[in-house]
Amino acid sequence: MRLSFTIILLLVAATLMAGCTTSDSEAVAWNDKGLALYEQGKYIESVEAYNQALKLNPNNASVWRNKGKVLIDLKNFNESLMAYNQALKLNPDNADAWMDKGLVLFNLKNYNESLEAYNQTLIIDPENARAWVDKGAVLAWQGKHNESLEAYNQALKLNPDNADAWGNKGWTLALLENYNESIKAYTRSLELVPNNTYRWGGMGYVFLKQEKYDDALVASNQALKINPNDTYALNNKAYALQKQGNYDDALVVSDLALKIDPDYADAWATKGSILNNQGKYSEAIAACDHALKIDPENDDAKKERDIAQSKLKS
Image 1 (cartoon, rainbow, N blue to C red):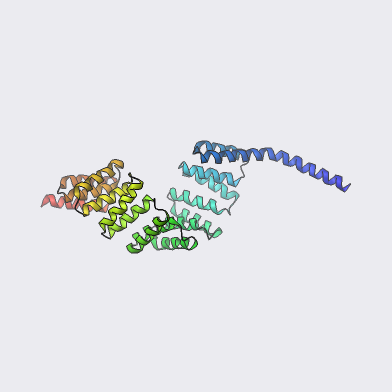
Image 2: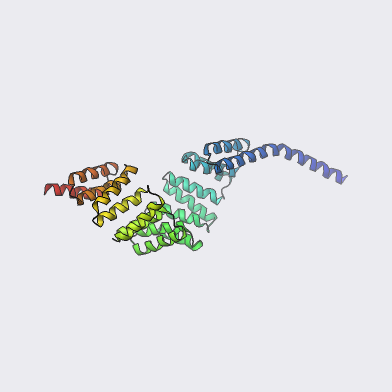
């Protein structure tokens, strides 16, 4: 009798599971399809697949997070935020979801809430080096450079070979005007990942601040080998060339940067400086006016414009 009762229970459980399994298995299939489409770069189709999965099972936190991730790549940050909020409502202890939410809020320029999300990540997973790096980036954008540096150092305690932590640390040290230590950090980052145009560009900037123009050219040229259209590196190169007195070549490089990005205010300011050095003061004023139209607070453009106007009056 006991055996029969057990068999009946198993049959009932199997029947109930069968009723759930069809819906759940279809949701899993749609989720898997979403993942596959994402890997193929078919982001819109991937979102559609995740939506199908969520129609079948709206309480799956993983699917909400997967959807949020695709929406980040689509730069649809508001909808991505809603997806992550739903994922965290269902599973508030998911450190990765908190970290992704921090990234979304960062892209929405909501730095305070982004920082809160990264702090929540680190409460759950204090040894998450990636979260420490991202937290450092948010703090840097808030102008809290010493706190940013502490976050990068914490990341490097956890993972001494984290190239992003070294590179970001290099930039923060540059902003703190600790140029020698900045170069050391950039060097270590580039030892780990040599083909990072941003790190070469950052190193070039630090060499400019140190007035090491030959080194600045080497770093800028390395960045341009990786990405010939890197306007930041082109602008640094133009600035270094003019500091060496090579005004004609500097102007060519500056014009190339502006051809790629006509709205690059710093490049217009650099062009104004080059034209001033060539004695072309009216053209320098025009270049600086371009810069100030884009960025009214551009100090370099203001300075070069004042120089040009003074020269024309003298």
